[in-house]
Length: 60
Image (cartoon, rainbow, N blue to C red; front, top):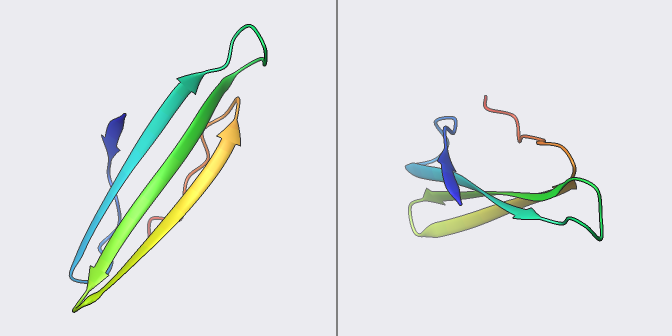
């Protein structure tokens, strides 16, 4: 797991990526990006899953 840079969303926002090796069953790694945003008393989470490549949520 590693922290990632995120855009200025809400009052607070964090992003991190989890990478899980899939060899030898699948070529490439399992990449999960998670973004957590807080605005006031509301928290929203966003998740992205890709195999074999790094995809990203928009940063602006």
